[in-house]
Image (cartoon, rainbow, N blue to C red):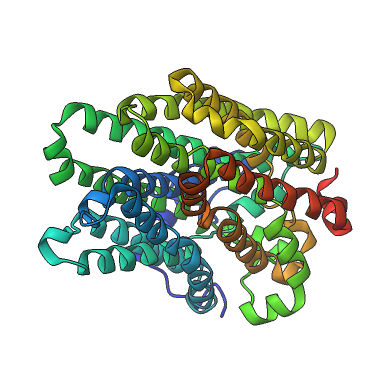
Length: 447
């Protein structure tokens, strides 16, 4: 189906009209900087949704949905539902790839982001166990899977396009740009929950206060949708995709042709993705369940640590262009392995220990996470690059992060915090093994 015959949504028409205004019928030229802005806005929106749910899965859902269980068991069940989104992401990629092929990228993105926003807003109306019993957990699982399907569909290829159009010697710098959305989303989500918890009595927060961040997430999704469509619908963007042959391909064909690259790309960032949840979701659950620390103080620590993560992500771009992306991933994976041997125990060492764990952890996370995305985009054949990159992202998050909070909390509660460190160590080993044995990976991220 050609661009001329693909139906367009009203949002696309509005975005095209804005682009055409003052730039003629062909719109305007898209510079890498403008693509970068669209990427950051989109990723910040997605990660804000992600962290709003993650924080609520510790502070709200165990009491709202699983009040008949003890706090630890309720949190474990909450984390089990949390993982459903990562299991649903590949399904969303398959569904929305078909929509993309039939109706175009603008329609796909519009539907996916409204599904994401709708699923997130629906959680805000979730009745508790006291009202509808086990149906509360079933509805939460349904809405969480809706978020996962939408996240799989919201892949827009902007990050891959940004990397492919990066100036010579700047690929590491442009590779870190999409990753800035994670700490930015965490900072906003943490500070919003901190404000609500500190401003409201506990009863009011659990009754209705926690619901507001989910409404905010929906509003942010609408803004992000228009910001991303403004780039996606431009003729210049379309020409770049055609020149790079970044059109969606069939899932089965992509897997059959590119399964080696997909597998390598899914396992190479295990260290950073496991670390991602070990310093964001898991420590909040441990501190909330097993210490006397208040959520407000820890959310402040988390926001400050995320700011350090932003600085580390930016530094990763400079280091990758100077020493190579493969070197940065390898060195940071080794550092994460060392971190796993002593750092988790800091969570049980008082307020200073908690802060040290978070600050050091976010610096390591930023350095590794900053170069973990799209490392193998150039390894895909041109006709499979768009779909292959989406599948790789889905599987990397599933294997590296989807079950991390659940496994880490279960291990630490049953065998001590050292066991959670062993889980993190397994992710670091996975990255080091992938970097050591995969020559294709070395060729494509070593420069």
